[in-house]
Amino acid sequence: MEKRRMFPVGEALKNAEEETGVEQGDSAVGKALEVLRQEVVGGLLYTHNRANSNTSRLLEVASFLYGLIEILEEKGIVAIEELDARKETVSERVEKRFLHKGMGVNLQEPEQDKYTVQGAVGIDCENRVHLCKAACCRFWFPLSKQDVDEGVVHWDMRFPYIISQDTDHYCKHLNHGACSCGVYEHRPLPCRTFDCRKDKRIWLDFEGAQINPDLEAMFIQPQHNDSTRQSGDVGNS
Image (cartoon, rainbow, N blue to C red; front, side, top):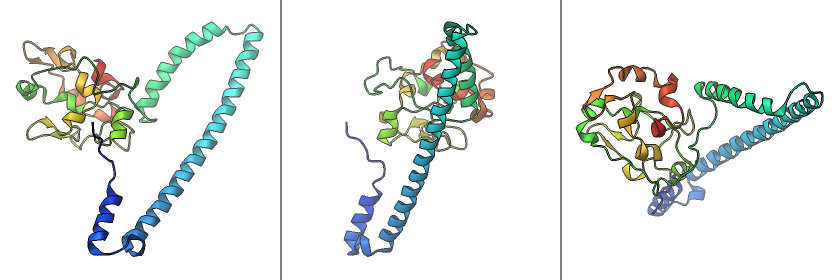
């Protein structure tokens, strides 16, 4: 399958300059691009330096922590098995707080090929969208590395790599007039496998076309609502 290039800006500028007979090296556009390039390089250098510094600090803290654990175990104060069990429960609590504050980078795990995944769901959305108001197109979920590499599906730069939404909290790729997906062939994995029939947040009775009367309340503040933004919620509800 042919992949789209994310930023064909350079090619477009080259074509424009060939048509006008202006060489990029002598043009104002070329100079502006070089300035922009230097700024990007500088920004990346700063980011990488900070990442190296933070990694060094993290390794130092981890060394102290592991050393402390070994001493406590040798003195019979803690048991490693008990510590491992406690770590699991604390980790879940910390991760939930971490994601709630919009921190960190989210990517789908485990990574799967969305074009070959089994279990795609077929639902007569066209006959039900007047009831559910395309609720699934308002859920937050992380994209996969495959999505990001393709550069077709947009993600929110404020919360990498969460599916991008408009100010009405609907997916940016939703065609409101036809209530259709603008990137259907490239749609993310959760959009392919999400089964709203089993989601009580949307349907009280799917077969009876009975919508959950509290559905809209879930989207009052979607950016601060764990039920709509947690990783995997769309695919695993």
